[in-house]
Image (cartoon, rainbow, N blue to C red):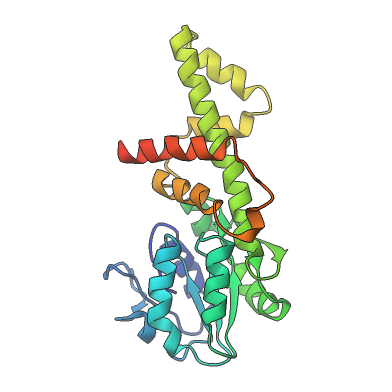
Length: 251
């Protein structure tokens, strides 16, 4: 397991109960929390039958994969659970050694859901690779088999685009309510009583499920790849991404 961030560490803990031998690696050492920690990505994957990565963005996946790819043996299955988009998946697929399969399996859900094994996992890949990955992915939550390579990464962007733009729109609606003198409780109650109830639950939460910078990254991923050429103009995603960039810059 490579990547022990907010999501990666609880996933590694869930794997530790199933794997015969689990080796982990993280860019910042010392986060292994009692798990066997390798000194490098190559050391972590050497001899492994399955490699799982949970990294922050396409650049991180590319950099770490360059370090462990030469150590992958034929027959290894790589499951990348990072949210990187279909273009990055295709790039990594093209670089794999012969006999190594790749499943893209980004997830939807919070850190608590990762710990509880109640995430939604969007899995894409060849059938043989998905069949092999399924039992392991089911330890993390409900598995949605999306299709061939990159299909899981594509669906994750579709879902996050809807979620993030909805949350941003409701946030702006509450700001308008404040400027118009509408009491905050009244505005929240009115929005929660309609079809935006699910979004309002996220707005009212005091727990941070997802860093703003990563939400902005997910929206930026929709700019690339042939999957998205049908959407010639995105009227909501681009302004929402700009708002997220401003919020991230403001801390």
